[in-house]
Length: 220
Length: 220
DNA sequence: TGACTATTCGAGCATTTGCTCACATTGTCA
DNA sequence: TGACAATGTGAGCAAATGCTCGAATAGTCA
Image (cartoon, rainbow over all chains, first blue to last red; front, side):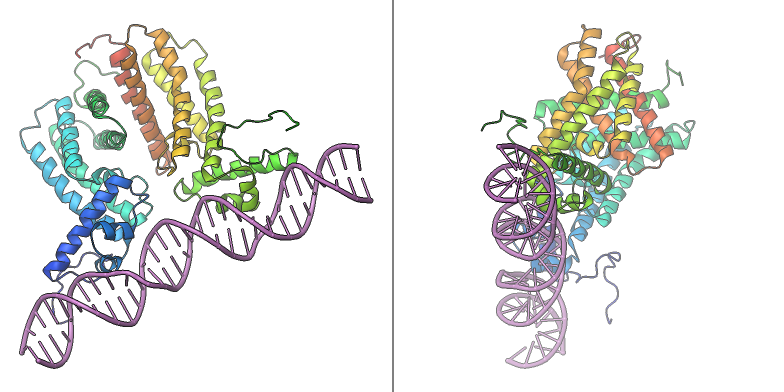
């Protein structure tokens, strides 16, 4: 009680906060191991014992800093949020408002792909596919929100005439379709991945342009 | 050995074939219970004990006719294949070749939705999301193939100028996007479901028309 | 150095889950 | 009716998994 609150960590923590350097490194290695395992075996087959083993530590140490398995995923989603926010911020900070809808889609997809390549496990937390835990799934939804928010703002400013609810629907389609692309990427060879990515861009570009850049077509 | 092969059931069976009426009814009730549970709790939380309990029988009886848990899902996928093939066949047997691409997409999505509404658990086996078993996942892929095949033939005849690999890519996009719609439907209210369905039709219609009905637009 | 705290460790508990097996019951057919 | 096959049953085994706990080790600070 003598020390001030060093790290609230929300309510979910209820566990020791790492103070010494070795324990901080250990927490980091646990998170890294969880991310790699997530990429290798998927969320369904992810076990705490396997995480600890891959991190080169014991389960006891893992539960010293994480109250339960879901907390590891939540913490991982947190770190992903920072990464993706930074990356998409950089991608979109150039003068993008004046670009065409197809260009915007290309930028977004490429940005997501960049994060995906650099960050193992990202697609599993973005697509939130079967995390089997409400807490972890909520963290995944928060990740999705944080990913889509900058694009939402960008579109709101660039296309003030498009009503908000329609913009939201379009962004939802964008998010869901992007997830599919990421989820499918794992099972396909590189050439097919490239093709799918190109097609996703094309489909989303056509769809979004029909609402945001109705140049020739304005039926319905 | 005296009786002829009554029911090959592929290799996966290796279990007793139900001969009396009561056991046939039991197998049917097991499949129905599995389908309902699949819809209620998802593939991840589906357990054999729960299936048996819901079917009003014992696990022993279940394993009397199914060699393992995956076999139940495989058999279920089989029954779904028959259902969906019949439904889509009826939907597409009218003169559809002359219709627009948007009409075709509407028919397909509505057909899939019809099956989904009538058949609990269908979306879990169509989207094959995390079945956690290679055998079951293969059965799900077979289900997808059987769903997409008639549409593939239809398009091949109606648009002989579109090269085969491009047609395949488009159908893959159609399948994946449809899955997303079904998977998302569960978490949304009816109004949002309708909206998403409409948007999916719109997006797929625009995308497919760009390849199959290139009226005004022909830039790569 | 000594006392106290932070950290590490891993055997193992409690629970879940796929599945088996020995036995009981029911149907069939001579 | 009797003999055999088909079917039904559920206690419980083996393995997996989330997580605890008591004990050992390392760091900090007076």
